[in-house]
Image 1 (spheres, rainbow, N blue to C red):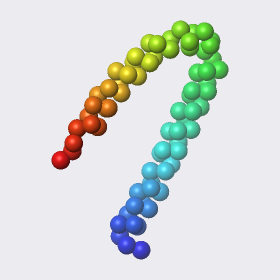
Image 2 (tube, rainbow, N blue to C red; image 1 turned 90 degrees about the vertical axis):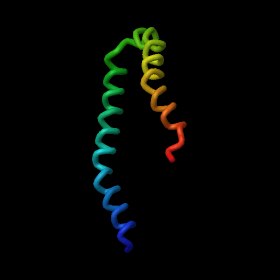
Image 3 (cartoon, rainbow, N blue to C red; image 1 turned 180 degrees about the vertical axis):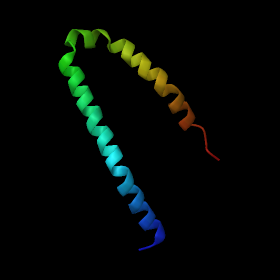
Length: 69
C-alpha cells in the first residue's frame, strides 16, 4: 500500500469517531428541541432563524467563490 493511501486511510479512521459523534449529538439535540418546543413557537421564529443562518452563511459563500490561486 502506498504511503498516501495509508495516510488517507489513517486520517479517515481518526476522524470518523468525531464526525459520527457530533452528528449523533446534533440529531439528538434537534429531536429533543422539537419534542420540548411548541410547534407554533418554532413557526413564529422561522424567519428570524433563517436570517441568522443567512448571516452566518453569507461570508462562507462569498469566500468560496474567490479563486484560490
